[in-house]
Length: 68
Image (cartoon, rainbow, N blue to C red; front, side, top):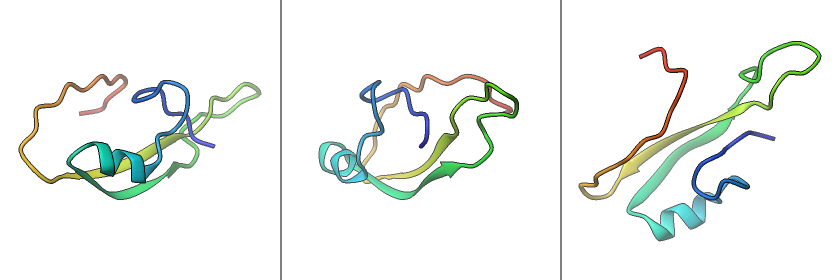
């Protein structure tokens, strides 16, 4: 499974719930295979979500380890 730590902080929020609660269309949702690293104690793979906002929104984004 994927590691996802925002929204509910305990599990991956279902696409249907996100689309019902927010003016968002989820156009892609998948595991980022191999993103958890290698080794004896590798982390869980992350996820990729591509979103389309159905209206103008203001976002607060909490991220880390970005290349750009």
